[in-house]
Each structure stands twice: as structure tokens, then as C-alpha cells.
Image (tube, rainbow, N blue to C red; front, side):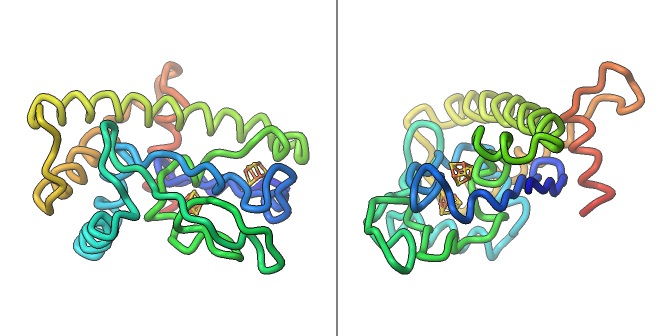
Length: 201
Ligand code: SF4
Ligand code: SF4
């Protein structure tokens, strides 16, 4: 069964299929997504000083590794499930799943599901696909803009210090608040999603 928790940029798509993923014992976490600029900004915007300290610690520990588009999640070998097997997967994946909350993951971890999930629950699939497509478009646009701003202000790469992380949080809030008139027929599904955060959160 597919469940949508629609909270704007923090939306989650959840499925019972994932608990026994047919594709990998570690599910999607065998190939973690990048923590892009907007993902880092989202984490800072949601978590404030605690999130800042967490990000600094994880960068220091090299679990999050700076690269051209944000931070890469380190992969480490470990048990995918209590009864095995051992395989390389996201550093935040434990035997019973992800150990970080939805507010500290790349947004893709929250809103991506594969075709097996859609096939399992055809009744919810259309809405879920639309939600996924809206979020993918929104995050792609936010990442493009944030990436351009980062390159303009830090041509040799950002310092990844607290001031830079705070700046990313503020910039993410600014971009994600740009919502077109929701009453307009041209308002995108993403606009609906962003607005729904204000009522559902
Ligand atoms: S979305 Fe698909 S690949 Fe990912 S954990 Fe769920 S069933 Fe597995
Ligand atoms: S952050 Fe969590 S959900 Fe995302 S890939 Fe890593 S273990 Fe999986």
C-alpha cells in the first residue's frame, strides 16, 4: 500500500513494498542520492542549530563529502538485514532501515519510489506520480538556482562552514516560498504542495 504524506518540499511517499524490497536487501539505500544544495538548505531550514551541528559533524567525519553539487553520502559495507547479506550501502542504512529522520535526508529519499511500488497500488499511483513529478521539477529548479549562486559567490568552492550552511538554509527558504497564485488554473502541482505544507505541518 502506498501512503502520501504531503508536506510541500518535505513530502514523503511510503510503501509497504519497500520493507521487503524486491530489488535489493537494502532497498534504494544501496545507491544513496546526492545531498544537493537544496537538500542541505532544507535540512538547515528545518533543524536550525541542531541540524547545523549535525551537518558539521558528519562533514568532519567524512560521512558527507563535499563535491560539485553539494554533499555525497558515503557508502559503507554492512549487514543489509539482520540475517544478511553484507553489502555496500548508504552510511546511514542500518539492518532495520535508515537511521536518520526524514528531516535530515536528501528529499529524494523521502519522495522517490520505484515502479514496483506504483504497480502494487494502482489506485494511488496517479496522484503519487504527480506528486513525485512536481517535487522533482521543483528541486531541480532550486538546485540549478542555488548552484549558480554558490558558483558566483564561491568560484573555488564553498567553505562548508557554519555561515555558508546558514546561507544555504536561508536561500532554500526564500526559493521554496516562491509560490504562484494558488487560485490560478496555471498554478503547478508543486504550488499546491508548497501551500499544503502551511496547513498540514
Ligand atoms: S522504492 Fe522500490 S527499489 Fe526503493 S526500496 Fe522501495 S521497492 Fe525497493
Ligand atoms: S539517507 Fe537514509 S533513506 Fe537515504 S539513502 Fe541513506 S539510509 Fe537510505
